[in-house]
Length: 254
Image (cartoon, rainbow, N blue to C red; front, side, top):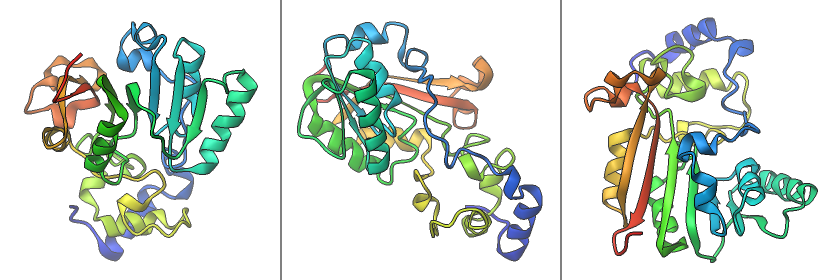
């Protein structure tokens, strides 16, 4: 996708978004305000009370720690980045919740609820992640997921969205070359940047779930600036700031 590439695309990106104006989204970590209630409902902490929770894609663990502090019996934060997991472990010790909040790269323990926030648009293979999740949730459990912006949102390119829909105008090669001016990790594709970017759309996510062991208990799109018109099917891909849903196993439903 993208039509402006080569030297022209690269030069335009350098002109429009020089190094000092680059978005911080590529390196930003979770904010201390995890907004779990905002994403999953005002009764969220009542829902997790006394439950075993897996925080899938936990990063440095802020939301895992908050859940451990606010009623979860056990929280298992899972991520691939060991330096972030170690940060979570150290903070858990400081907060006195290390006995019920652990940070690992994988687990065999089954969860009552799997939480995934701000992660599905970054997973390299979302279908594979759903398969893993289906093996880690109890038969009567569920997955609560919230993510966005998705790919067709004006800023769905995250770091690469230097202006609305710019990530769809410039070619991937031009954007990666621009990024290499201030990032030295050797990424050559969107999927290889720090945190990953898989170009997930809402309809694409629905298709992935349909082919998985899960079904939607509910799915909701949150429109940009709360504009109701943007919830319409024809506009939701470009007008949804957040996608959130509850998934249950097709073999059982709570």
